[in-house]
Length: 79
Figure (cartoon, rainbow, N blue to C red):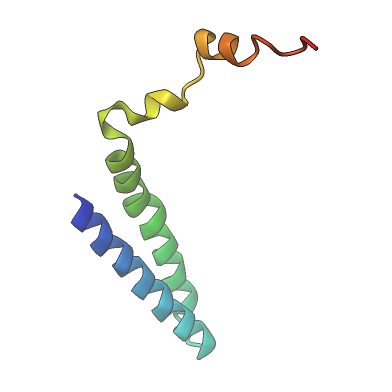
């Protein structure tokens, strides 16, 4: 999965570089290439990255619950 993400990211970088080149040369399809690159990044790369990064419950330390809020604000306002 990690190798797949690296390959997908390299593809994205190459895609954006080609899109920038096409924009600089005023190619008629430059905006389409850049739009498809953003689409690829948003709907293919990012979901795979988020799944890879937060599978195995690693996201649970970022979720606020009552115990964490009580611990954070326990000494708040006591001066």
